[in-house]
Length: 466
RNA sequence: GGUGCCAUCGCCAAGUGGUAAGGCCGCAGCCUGCAAAGCUGCUAUCCCCAGUUCAAAUCUGGGUGGCACCUCCA
Image (cartoon, rainbow, N blue to C red; front, side):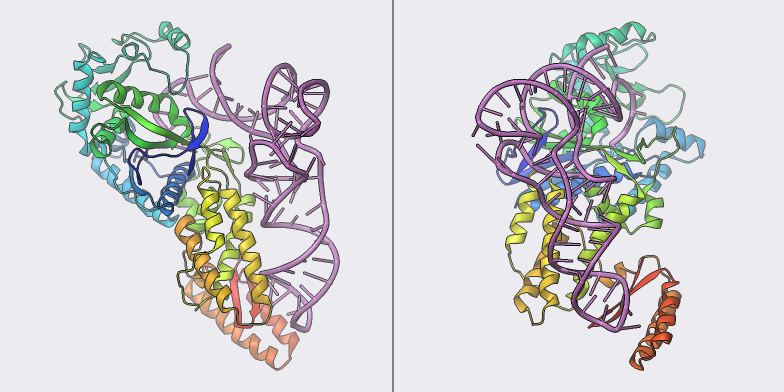
């Protein structure tokens, strides 16, 4: 398997520290608001990565954190007169529900900041003891970036440039402008946590380092995790700081491979609160099937920036539809194990730094060939068996085509409408049988008015929502 | 200003030295009572200039045009 390392900036063979086993850590959401398409993209990319690693027979331990201590959470709790837990529980539940809808499997470990305070304070103490961190008279603890000679090695920034900012910085008790908080004191009586350094709350960067130590890092290993992932914007300062903390408080480097996914833009513009163009996953799911969103968001290479627009989404939906139409044609065929060349090629494509485009091309070619053969007369017992196995493989590795094909095409239709349509179809088929084509065409128009298409097949007449 | 990424058919998008995958849209045809679905066929020499090479979309240099990060952010 090949992986592009976004720190070394090259693609190289993936070799885990322990043969056959992979540890993966991905920065998860801060649960103070609804997840938008960017969160979805990131979760999807690393969901795909774990699937591909597992298909390559790796035993994967995948951790994705939930940040449930954060200034924005506290702010929201104050605004809504709720407890932190009420806010974080609400958004964590929503996040899980929405991830389920787009077929993102749960990580093996989902650590929360609130459950990792001990690991965090221990790490801070180590950093203080080794001279990499210092407490101020105000009760804050900062990481001393000057004490780490490898600082900025991840993002490859230039120290002088960072130093320039120092003069502009307002007066704080920081030694260097680039120093970041490991522990922030809280004195106004609002929500705080206990620590040996006083009342306060942990810094965001610390959280990930501490959780990785607690849940994934192994004694004596050169790297705390094999792969560390997250959004492209996290490289600096978040991952830079994480790496520094781990480097200075333990005897290993944070990650062997770094993977950063590209951003999701909406109609060419960055999603942001200030622009008011955030596209929330929950809203997208009202309009589109979760699997269509999954297919669309995964259809472009994970490192590229993604420009969300409805035209391309429709194009993706049509592509997914083809998988489901073949599933319909094969409905009832018993699934049996059947390794095929297609499956080998598909995995090979995905194992090359998740080359989804190539994988999709292979799928389209497989679908065409299968349809072509099924169009000709004959039983095609082997073809059906192999195709079923291929579709099952696509479901497993890519998560496409996991639904009942008939239900998939009825997305968003209520039961009353469905039975009305079914009744009209029966009438139309009677008219067709009587060769009363004027009547049958009129009935078809009536059915099409529901926003569906009709198709007559040897197996019967089916409709699909447009 | 610093660091880095990108530029391939109308649209989306693979391909990183050997003569341009795939999808959407479009056109023609097969199938169909007619449609729809499915199938078949057709449609680009890769932003510009120069260089390296037997050979470049792919490497080098320059130019032009986009974009990201440098502040919380997936």
